[in-house]
Image 1 (cartoon, one colour):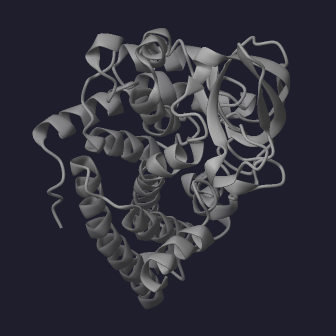
Image 2 (tube, helix red, strand yellow; image 1 turned 180 degrees about the vertical axis):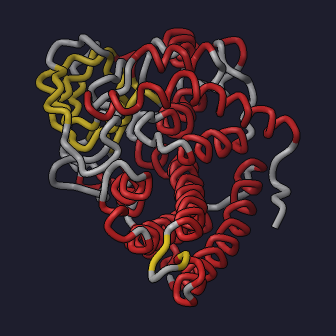
Length: 380
């Protein structure tokens, strides 16, 4: 089915992204996976190519174009290239909206130029060792000390945690915390008391640095409060739909890519004297996955268009996120099975996609949380 989502400008941008991947990412990605971190030079190269801050106003060095379809193209191409560990989506689509919508003019002038050039790499610190998806259970505290906040607590599973020069920290600014007592504080690299733990050893996305962060009597200047005091919970809920859409886009792109490489494989691989593709069971497996991908793609493209127009609601974003990522997980498992023993070898793209994609149903809100959001909207 021909897609109608993208214009010629979007497709021209796709070619730019592919050229960037071929030059700046693919030749280095294996080494990044060994190192457990993406090189900073690649971030600066992305900035020079205009791949950072695409929605940031031009006066701060950004692209000045809030059309989410450009972010969708970026997510699709990085997924197809097998490079999910280079977290441009986190930087652009999750952190970016907090800075463009909540930052003061002074904060924007201070942070956004580096955000767009790749000199400032960003992260957001929500998850804590004991809270998981429960934002209302956050224990990190920020006490008002007059001219600064005194920040204490720890975070875990923080993407870009090692590289980050600027971290948005979710903290309790009232004793009770919860929905009416959380705030967003920006902690910058080099601040006394801000320490990074180990770069966590994950089963997939090895190139993406994921870290523990510790805050011990960190003095955060009052001018580093982002958004409204005690308004953090509302700010987080406002931006979660875009985060989930970014994950969903990568989910369907991942499933489609797996289907593509597996279709090629079963045409070439022989068993019992003939190609696997000649076996009815194999054809049925491919037919089922192709149909599921086509149906999901149609829904996702509608959600992308709605989000670009500003009309997508949290419920449909949750539907997109859980369905596309669960599909990606099922397709990865079935495609690996169709590869047989070779599918278990890390030199094959299907093996890496299997482990890289497993986190998709967990971060950004688990499948179970997505279903709860949808269920409440229908039944409460």
